[in-house]
Amino acid sequence: MKIGDKIPELLGRDAEGNVVRASDFAGRKLIIYFYPKDNTPGCTAEACSLAEGYGRLQAAGFALLGVSRDSAASHLKFAAKHSLPFPLIADEDTSLNQAFGVWREKKMAGRTYMGTVRTTFIIDGNGIVTHIIDKVNTKDHASQILKLVNN
Image (cartoon, rainbow, N blue to C red):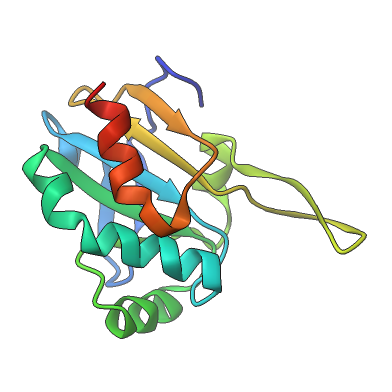
């Protein structure tokens, strides 16, 4: 997925089992952030930053979705533990990660594996990607997004 691309219609199922479609957000700006794993330090910091800034993001006209490979049950616990006010998509088969191009080879501690590269996509009301953030400031991500879109 690159700037100018249209996002896929089917985005997956949220933690409550609801089907989420791009058309659900027609006419609204959307932020989709991909993160590696529930309840890890960086992912928790990012989710909490977005939760704290959620009101400001909504005031700027944005809806927000988080996506990881974790199960719906894991997402429910993660969202409840951190009072996340936005849906999390359980992408257990990595199909959405792959569609957005964030499922890639990673290296850590001398081993190579496939995983989610932390990335945020900003989408306009027509479902077109307008910005991609691949250097995510996990501790202040909401402000990072707002600065980018307000320039």
